[in-house]
Length: 527
Figure 1 (cartoon, rainbow, N blue to C red):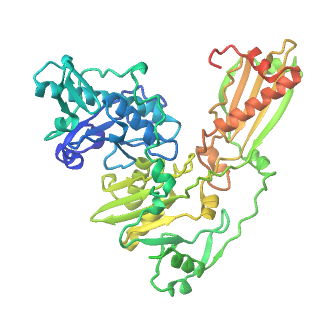
Figure 2 (tube, helix red, strand yellow):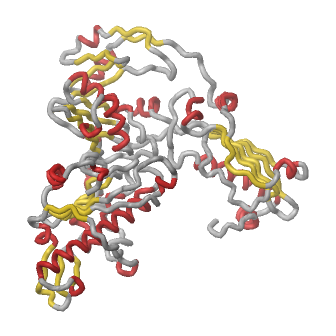
Figure 3 (cartoon, rainbow, N blue to C red):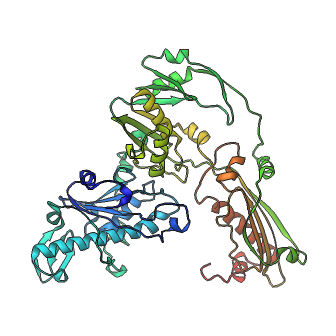
């Protein structure tokens, strides 16, 4: 059993019940460990073979539209030798799934996938060993597939996975190295089955955070500022309090109205008379770039080689500035969360890409131990980085603690577009030149507020200087008038667009086809 779960054996078996539970640990070669972000390096993939023969896969990853519910199930089914339909995916539940930093960066398939396949192969090896003991033959004489194990030359002598799991209460990890199936042996992977979540999603049966209902729950509407940077001067809540059945909360700087019916809560919110400060108007969409350049922090060097200063003296310069405005995430599903606190245990159903970091953050907000907070992630209807943070989960948890009742906070579409984080506006200034042979003579690249991801110059250029003036997080994020955050490959979207746009400009300067120009300036085999 993994130390990451921090459960004793009795609690472990209470949660997982009868059957065979297999654990698998990844070593420090994981991508996150390489990045040095301090995340645990003992990630685990968990599988349970139940007494009914069904296979449960526990993953801290979540499903937000890419289809990993199905692709991960394919991986487990392939290595176990079972039908895809016998796999149950349990994802993003912090009480039973294993710690994960979150679903982002396309890490699910390439990082969790291999761990899951290995765990499934180990589970199959355990089943083979149990079958060998039960059938009284060496494991080498056995074959497995379609949820059962049989003696290779006596197929009538077989035992099903369900029979092998009956009466077992095991948490095992093999010492031997699991052998994964080769591509030519694949029967489930490499195919395109119907998505396991497809029918629910096209018929409306799928449950998202805003669809969760529990007895006694209240719908909350929260008073929010009409402008970024506005602060509340005073609020008259007398008329809101008169709405029949309403619960009024005015605590810790949050004013909220709660009701058993969402439309009644909305009417109560509209009845509040609030007065706000009016902040000084900021720059418009054209002037924002000049404002940001004035706020830019000191640069960090991304890449430097050769002598760009000397190279500039001998070339006809091609100078361009590339600007990208703020971008909303605009997911199909607005942010939502439902929180309930009972008997010292908080349970939050949240639309989040990061269930475990959200759990830890909520534990701090509630003043509770993280073990007493459970985050359950239903289906997530698109995230694109915007559901990494989750103010609505914190708001629901605070209100549940104050009122003593389950509370749901579901953002309206208007709230989603105004109070969510945005991909930050950013600027790239590029100066370069082309020599007489159609080669890039030098490359100077300064990027503001996007960060250095994707800013490296992989073209064959002898003189390069690339700098980053404030990223999308940290000190750089403080320069914006409202909250910014990750948005689909944060930083790389801006840097790739600016770099390749400038390469097009250089190709035009050289009078060459853009593809021919790129190939002429590339030695990197992968590119």
